[in-house]
View (cartoon, helix red, strand yellow):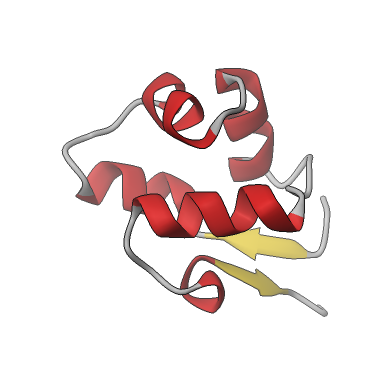
Length: 69
């Protein structure tokens, strides 16, 4: 598991049960990429992280954080 935590899955649920595919389309990545980000198997590029945060009208640090544990 990578040290970049996120709450993308929770934000999708809070926003009308948005699917991974829908979020991927809005951000410009595949559904598989969104799934890997949520499962902490893939760290998004800075640009992708900002795009995800923007979709939910959140700041970057409200969506992603560094988990040192």
